[in-house]
Image (tube, rainbow, N blue to C red; front, side, top):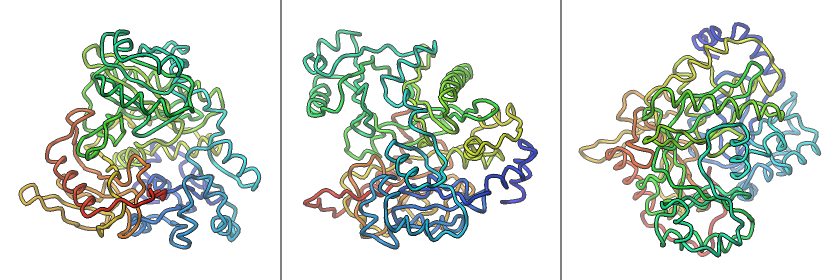
Length: 494
């Protein structure tokens, strides 16, 4: 670990050396589809390995900072069958890799399922992660809304209907409830991406929503809420032995037209902007109290480490409402942690590991929690894959520049982190950038991201025109000469 960084973190954690040694009692092997969301511990741990399923140009630059093994490099056919972590855990090549390890190890998982737990226990592997029963009552949107009410937190009005009753109702009947546009979500079945949330402003929106939900028989209840035109922020929390740490309240980017590139705007999460914070300090403080209340509830169930809460902020009333809980590493990571590290603050991943490994070394909780709220000009936004069936460009992961006069996008140099930028006219292309000739899945919300060392948002739903030009130009180039395959690809890239 970098000596300067060590000394900065030691001001918060006096016994930092002992903490890091305890974490490395066994090699930690982070397991998942893509390496970038798992990169942070490699910046402070020597005995840390990433095992990813999918190959990407990310590997060329990330291997400068981390030890990464990639299934697709060794066995492309096997990797094509890996659609989730459970597939990877059962893969013969992955099992052979673990059997070849000569030193004790722990697997690190960002989220578990009952199926994953069953595999882990059958194999007898040591692992880091939360059991599903510790977060079972926050995963589904309906259950989380009920928990928010039971904790006495401010909650957005909602109307719960059975699927059968909901499908019988007309747009006019539903609109009459609040005399305004409304939002529809499945209450008892988790669906993310473009089919998770439906914004109903008119009868055409209602028709599209009704058509999709009438074909889906996996849920029995629907949650309907009034549509509030506001900001969609989120906040990270971390259950530790000294309390609930929390991040800054961070603006989410939703349904950005340039990134959607013609895809239907249905509440698709695309990124964050830490430079955009259009709310008063008391709103951020209220969000912090809500995250703490939910965090202590999770802790009472045995949950440890990082989780995230999505909010809705109404700028007309200055009210903030918790909407969803993500009991895992969220899309804010690793960018938020890179921002924290650039500020000299230990990242949440460090406290996540302390919590899971039972390392109860004292740290300056108040100072950490205060300094985790520090912001830097930073934003990231994902590109949606629809209409990109094959990677036809030779794009390296790294730092690029955009000339606003010539409209030229130019590769500058390798890079993966916030400190790799030289000025705010550059951007970073990272997080599962496909290699030329590889297939691109259509069933994922994003397949690589652009990172900017500046504010890019003008609201949760719009970005600066110059940044829009960059995204539009890159999106158009990626979609040039594309031919839709006869059979949709099931290969994941992120």
